[in-house]
Image (cartoon, rainbow, N blue to C red):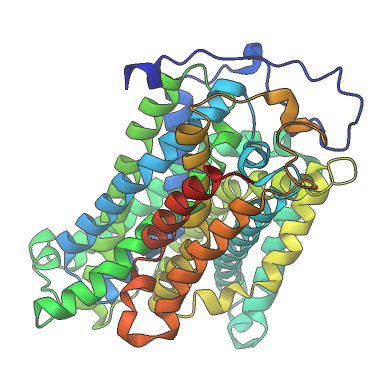
Length: 473
């Protein structure tokens, strides 16, 4: 652990590489002078990304699914502690060498093959972009109903709200990240204020925390609980499985390994647990107040009678969702798409591709109910991302022992070119990891493979990759 935390930072000058097809400004390694993020910056990044509506809905979904408050909170806390491990490990190369996720993937998948994990991760990010945009759009639709009550009769209102919020995101993508920096500092605090406001409302209207936290589990047997808990835990890990891959996109700016490890440890689990508790308590209160579990905060806010309170809360929600969406769901896929053709795809073009695919992913279906969100979306895509994490970690820590020739990551004829730019062994391991996890979806008798999709895929790909890499070609 001491060696892990105190690993020195390495700077690589790639300006002398004549073939620029694998290089652009966004994919180049950062200089040591650019690695200025300390522990506070890393922690603040995670607080900003963790305090979001999907986190609230994650916790609410567990309550709606039948868990009591402590079961839901335990599931979320455990999932976030587990996902910290691949988060720390994949962050290491980004901090040490200053390289982003798509470039790190070139070491194991090949200079061309790295597009496979990059695009898989990018597609998931497009789905998240769509989800956040749908949430923001519904907040705008609710605002329009407050301003123009007859708007509630317009059946296309939710779609119009979605496209309006989508347009706001596209505006900031085109204008660049700097155009939204003035909002980033206020996004998470705004959402925390709304969350604590809902918590106070729940406390006052449900008769205190006693009745709220006394809500029993809906599971009649231990078997029913475990059948819900196992895929739920996978969903909790899957929630941040995306960032556990592309965390180098952010930690390439970290001052040291110690900064990225401590920053993530104090930023991610606490913020997720605190904001999740708000979602859990408020959703439990809605059962007492309305007779049903309302897991969507926009729907809940629309039931409030004071239009001023609702207006301020929804404006805060729109701002917070906008900043979170740009930071968490545009930066990384834009880099991933740029990896396809660094010469032609810039950050803005990559961001616009993300925005368009976010519509194609039909987020309104992903958020149709808690089971589609947790068991369909989160568990489903974790079957693809778990194997990628297994391969990256096996390659960097076991096979290469944390040593990379960074310049060759940007060359078509370097050590990471393999066969025509593809490392078939990594691709075989990826297919095997995904295949084993998804078999459980097709064959009910072994459904546990899908329930544990991220874990199963990670383990299969990890060990198969190492086995294949040790074989002679």
